[in-house]
Length: 243
Image (cartoon, rainbow, N blue to C red; front, side, top):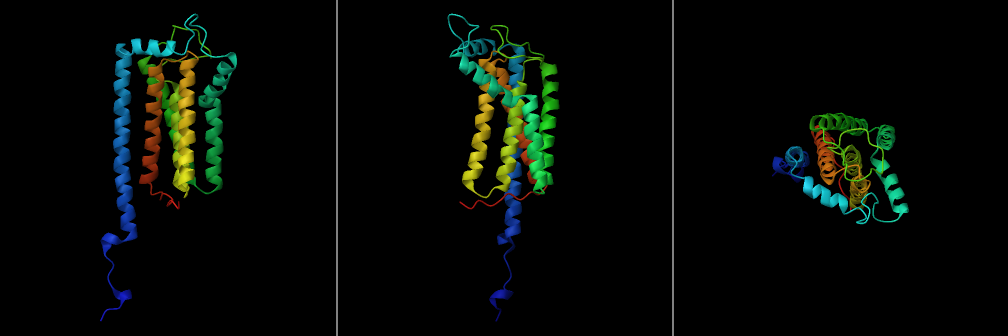
């Protein structure tokens, strides 16, 4: 008679095998999401280049303007100043500080892979976004006066793309280490709130067309998804939710 301790374990129910299958499923889903984001971005870039988004861009941009004076954004001056502060959250200086501090925090907790994934995603997003701007070479909006200084081409929005790549990747990395579902949700919710606010501020300040911002969001999200894919492929085991 065979004791319970001597019974053979069904390999299909082995915890390690189950984990591998889950990771493989996630990798496939993330890979499909990356492909979808890139397809959407290229399609939008083609529409922008052909001028097919011009009418909708103008309508949406003017929706943020005083009908009497289109050079005056809607709302009080304090709102305009507040949105300048928000738009800075997607600027090079702030994102560099966020990336460096977050990477140092990961290293302090001996999470070298997480630090490398974050820095890699942000740097590659910055370089590729500059390249995309040069290739599309779309002029900045000339319909209204600009509420912020600009130095480069319009599509895709660098603030939108880099804020998405930085904050969404950081939220993903934090969520991969966090066991509480509420904490995971909070990380993603804060990241999405910042990314959306930065993008809308660019349109409000008249420095980007809405399609520039949409293109930036998709472009940055694609890099964040790629960062997640790298994390999964390199064997980082996600924390098991506890509540």
